[in-house]
Image (cartoon, rainbow, N blue to C red; front, side, top):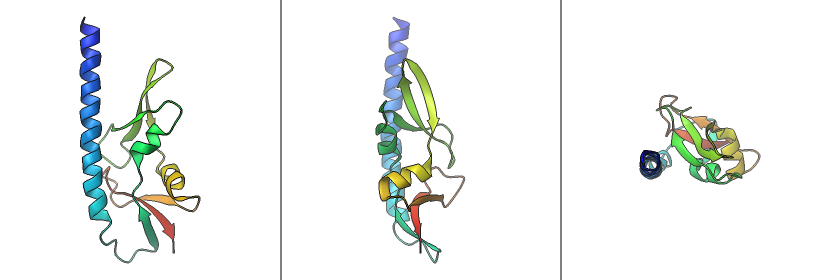
Amino acid sequence: MIAGDARALLRRLIGFSVGFVAALTIIVATELSRDTGGSSTDVIGIPDVFEYCRSGEFELEAALRSDDADGWRCVGRRNDIWGFDPVDFDDVCRRQFGASATARSEDPASPYAWQCVTAD
């Protein structure tokens, strides 16, 4: 059955991609937590995109659709429809760190440069 084989392959590819991105996120989080320099905001953490996507009603997965800061999507099936929802990083930071948290990307060309911050 070709459809079943394609579906199984797609699940494996998504699983591999999620694992790879999770490992890279840990590496990047370690690097970003070292020293952020003299910015006017305090870094309070790294947004957990994976938990954000899983926390919704449909328990979606986080995935990169493009290799830049805006490339993150929550992906999965919802009511038998496959979808790619953009990630709102300000919302990720607020849910994780409270109402005063906002998101910033240190590098618009990198999907791994997101930080949650609060004003000094």
